[in-house]
Image 1 (cartoon, rainbow, N blue to C red):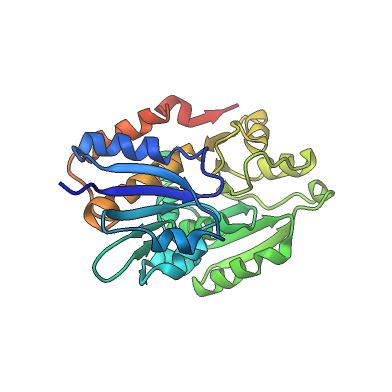
Image 2 (image 1 turned 135 degrees about the vertical axis):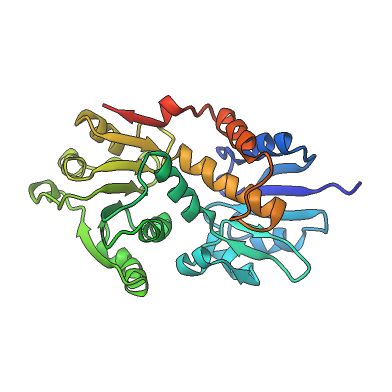
Length: 289
């Protein structure tokens, strides 16, 4: 029997929980597949990609490879096309197909928190994950989205994406004195800042006061500096570990069935095993100060 290989690539990669998540899922599904990790950066992506043989079924991609994976794909799903980012490649006879499961994973994580619809929202940060957050919020019905960014000029592409999706996107600068200008109230906030980022307390306090529920895509360290401010004000704050699990489940669907919308047989048990693999339980998933 020919081995089936999968892996997550990125740089850095040692911190990735993807091998734990995928191994847990395939064990429940009765699939003897190999899922590893490999440190691959932008400089050696092309060589590593060309070196894959027929035993490879697909790849999970993390930073800084999502744009390169987008370019390598022969086709892309709607979420990948909108965001310009591919975090999943599924190999086939016609070439690698590209998917962005971050969008679906974020949506599923928000729904687990009881957030089934959004009217107004804020995204903190304007980096690569912000585009996925914006598409997620639009899919959930958001009509007004504010981007709160330390470098507002980086949000230009997000404003353009909002125009394409016919949703109003405004930009707020996270300047040192931003706490003096209280932001508008929103239903939900998605934090997309890199792990370990600390905003000035007046800024984070103002965001928390008018930010609704928080889903911070970061999960290490936890609570994040942003979540700490939410909790200090007695507001709900959820870790991105739930998003990580949910987007990985969509990757499993892709690797097994070729379709992120195709629910798998025994999927509930697989998801339960994945959550256990990262010590995620219902009580710990949503915290409130």
